[in-house]
Length: 137
Image (cartoon, rainbow, N blue to C red; front, side, top):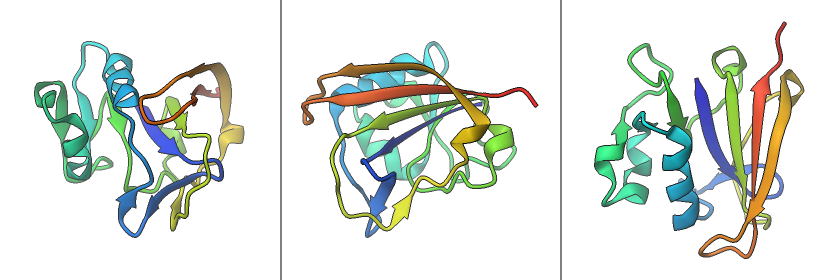
């Protein structure tokens, strides 16, 4: 599966149950990243995709069997211990520091960085997008 996450400079994902930031150009890029498949999301993420709900598929638990099979946006779930399920990891970095109480906890040594690009976002001067592929055992 391909997993998408958004983080601030220190890996923070959430603060007090809220996303740290949002950027509508990143949201559009996530849909492009999913390609022809629908992007699987947590219900928490649905408001990011207002107007594009036919392109997304909300599920209660991404890690259950009927959860994500293609491309998933993870905002509120831990990735710790899920490395074997993730073939591709796409990280959008906000390039800012925000307070956080939930961080991305994943062993990036198990992945190979394949691509990095930077682009201007709508609300952020610079967004960094990194694409990792899981290393073969």
